[in-house]
Image (cartoon, rainbow, N blue to C red; front, side):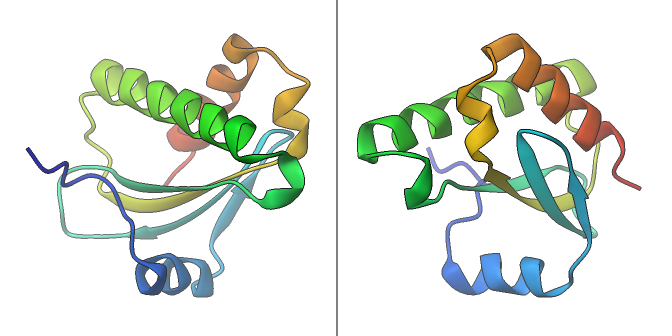
Length: 110
């Protein structure tokens, strides 16, 4: 079954980033745009400076878990498209700290 919440195309990423609407904290940068859909669509980007492929994939899996938990608790009622960019400081923090930081950013979407 295809997940309609995931943004994968480079054009979609660049389109959202070009709007330059951002929220930032220690672990993440979130670019966003408002849509007419009644659910949260997301894309994840982890740069090569953070680590090798194993570490980057681990971070992406963790972010997906965080997003799924946030969607289940909030029923995914935000109608935004977001691109989440992980920062290197995410490696130094534990999972719970990062989850709270991402939750705060998503709750700030207006």
